[in-house]
Image 1: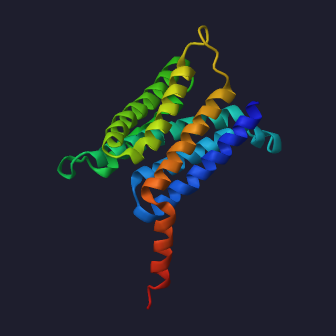
Image 2: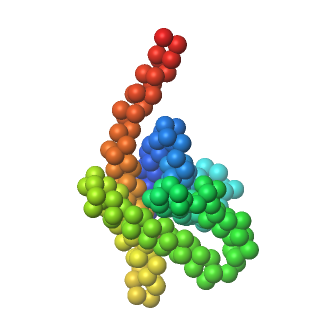
Length: 215
């Protein structure tokens, strides 16, 4: 079951990666770059065990752990970019500050041996990204119902977050369960973004502009 759920996570995350990179190619927004790259690392988590079969020198636990660090850091950067865009133009912080959460990647080797500290760091990053996303997308859904896709997707992530961090003494959350719930959240958010930003129409318009550039 875990192998199948890993494949599902890989397929959906790979689909999300392509979609967010396509959006980034159109509007150059930091949030789309961060979400696309984060999805790429989630896809890597999904196939980590299969990579170890074909390349025995690779450690799936090492790949999974570091992919999680990169993915979580990029998700919080995306949340910071979302928060920046939500603020009025005159009060926005510099774009470079949205990448501040990536400092976890540099600090992680120093705390990798301290299980409690690194778990708290990951939980703090995940919880912060979820809180920002829930607040902003709840507000936007109230103003525009089309944002409900993103809100529902974030709720899937929130449910996964809560169930994952419940102590094992109270609840044993299997790996395949969080992979499937995460996959559902990624798919819903990606479909929601495509509908809101009319990705196919924008790509078609972009292609038409290229074809008529020299006319």
